[in-house]
Length: 276
Image (tube, rainbow, N blue to C red; front, side, top):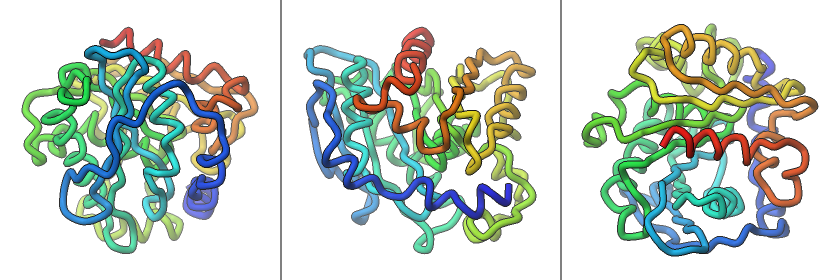
């Protein structure tokens, strides 16, 4: 876990240049900067498939050690998922040092509430909602998918999340032995309740969990532990360990120029569609 704490930030730094220069998938930005709460960090963008009609909905959370990241730098992810047939929402959320756990999880839950309440007007089906995240964003997605109190506190009725996909996520990282995790989670009164693996129950939605076997930032054991816990609970899990991919590669492999590094986009979206 020391490696995670030491290098999460550098591995998930903003991708502004990449976002500007990379070729984009054939999809459109349906809406930009919509507010799901108060403040500039509670806004989101929506991307839609090139073909009109009602489509399943994906909510994507980017990574960045819970202290960096901008939705503008991940439009290529929104377009990649939209080109695969998902109306895709990419929100910002508040970051350290403005907030600590659980505030960013609550922001992500509020973005999910906005999505359930409003996505139909943008062509998305709120009853076919999937969560996708990379790194710290995979943690956020896992907490919403597995610990139902967060969506419930945000006013989301029932269980709208049909599946989730986590890419290189930290899911089991106690003890807090590095600066990133200590500053982000150190004030939590119940540290066990900060761990996604604790909430691996039969009520969890199907999960696609992927990592790279060359990831030294968030070690692949995080993916193995969550996958094993979900399987033990009887949940459908597809676990992928991609040869040669490092921490950043698992999200970069969603982009058009780097998609040849691994079949991650196709395997992930095939799984998500099958869960719908």
